[in-house]
Amino acid sequence: MLELPGLIDPHVHVREPGQTHKEDWDTVTQAALAGGVTTILAMPNTKPPIFDASTLDLALNAAKSKARCDYAQFLGAGPDNADTAAALAPQTAGLKMYLDSTFGELRLDDMTLWMPHFEKFPKDYPIVLHSESRTMAAGILFAAVYDRPIHIAHVSLKEEILLIKAAKERGIKVTCEVCPHHLFLTADSSSLTLGEGRRGEGRREVRPRLAGKEDVEALWQNLDVIDCFATDHAPHTLAEKDSDNPPPGFPGLETLLPLLLIAVDDGRLTIDDVIKRLHTNPRRIFNIPEQPETWIEVDETAEYEIKAADQFTRCGWTPFDGWKVKGKVRKVVLRGQVAFEDGKVLAEQGYGRNVRGLES
Image: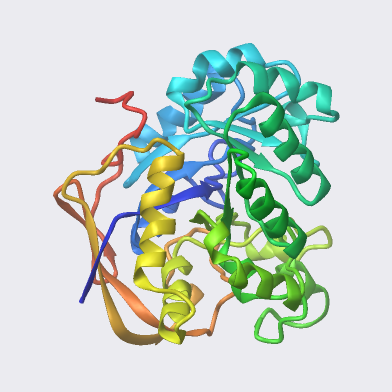
């Protein structure tokens, strides 16, 4: 039995408030524990989005009553909330800036709207950028100009990882994360058992999009540049994914560790690589306190098939359905209490704590 520290997923879409038919704080934290994740950082693009004191309270109150693992909530950067965001920073996981298209209060249409956030958001709290290709390059320039750390979400392309590598070599304060689906799937992946025609195409929809083999290979070749693994857990129902207008996103909390353990078994990763990118680095980058008496037990010899029907996420599907993997989470101990064991979530609703210390 392999013992690992509690894993940290810094990129999770909870869907509460507003879309709890997909997921809520209860089901998402059950899925987290089943995957060996003891801390999640929640994204702000909910309905309504989390961008001020009242919407932050809305999310945190739901989490306080429902969450079964520990958590923090990101605040979204909008065109006119830089002062508010800076004042709320100590209560948040950090600031999330959507530099590519998004909606409503979080839309940042031009770079002049980025400037107040870079100027005012406290440097000891992270700014996370949803940015791709050229907007990512612009975000790195902002990090250099304002001399403040940024974290790039879900890197997927060769050009992106090589630019981040060059920026790091020049001392620019940039860190990044990569999602398992961008490491294990490609745009032409024949291993996706997602159905044919429109249904199959809808189930492939994700942002950033699945990339080509050269891009995936570049990520593996530059593992030393990748600071964190993160799921970008983005649950949608099958009815939504199979519709005429399928929303982008994959669930990922429960498949995160077994997929990475495939790479360990293949010799592409070590267990230390996994610990560094799912515990040590996320703690440092996101200023997360150590969880006392917290660990997970993994049977690294257990071979099984991923089945959507066995998962705790409310969305009820996974792009990795049918994949044969090796390594199963058997037990999760969170702050001295057994939170998950042999397929059963034992932590009760409300056991999770806000890692920003608001409930202590």
